[in-house]
Picture 1 (tube, rainbow, N blue to C red):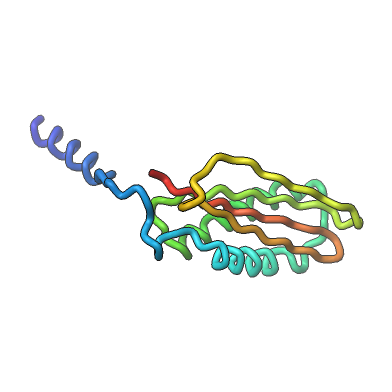
Picture 2 (cartoon, rainbow, N blue to C red; picture 1 turned 135 degrees about the horizontal axis):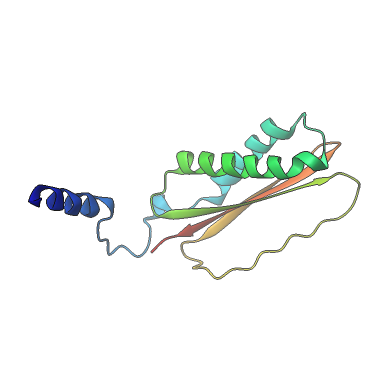
Length: 134
């Protein structure tokens, strides 16, 4: 019985260590220019030959958002950041689109990047928000 309690306590303590760091180091900050490059390349690779189909747009947005989040997490490897990914896909018909975001964040640690992709059939706007977790 005592062995199971001590192993349970050890596993909890190894999950999260107390940290009094309230700001990331300079080299551990969210870098919008790097993220924008990743977004631009990923959107081009995935959507270059894609044609707009309204019935597929929902699933395509979800799969793109998941792929973007995983790529950003693995490429940047910033331990205390949380990533919010927003993807909008629409049919290319010459219309204008306005997208606005509002949020409460710390301008010293949090940031965002976005990229636009267009072909003859569709447009896609992908945004990634990097929010530092205190």
